[in-house]
Length: 213
Image (cartoon, rainbow, N blue to C red):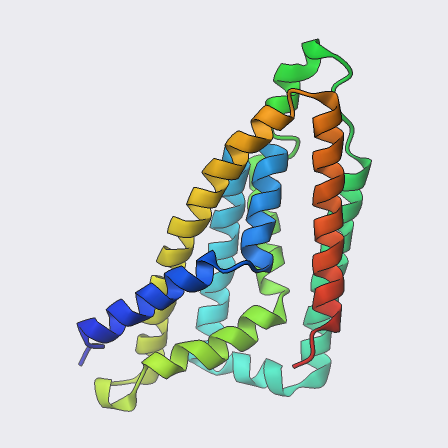
């Protein structure tokens, strides 16, 4: 048996609303898109969605429950994620800007290769235990043994959540990327954008460290 269409529709709508709600992942996409451009934002989105595949698989296989129930594993994941965010904050703070109008074209180009931005999205997502806890609590609410084996249901729900994430985060990437390209025509705008991005990453790192399971 398959999950009923009304449950799938309700889940997809919930996933869209959750993706729109301000959180670490969409703020991360917003910051990277504004700082590096639309393609960068889309690459980060792809990386985050790859991370969601890992979280979905972890929930379906029961690994997520083991990690969440282990304080040592949970804290290790959390501190790795916070350290990575602080490193990104440092990179943003030390990023320079063009010195005159001749540097405008270069300023519009992504400062980081696309494959690295994709990797950032993966690391950002899989080292965030809040996502793991959320998936562990959220996905099973829409699954039931009466519709068959639980793992396939969890995987289907995870795929729908990823689709909702692509739609919302893709839109954020395009809008924020366009805004960032305009701001970076100014040297001062570039510097302000870099510092705001670095501050956001640092704040997300602190928030992650303070998170308790």
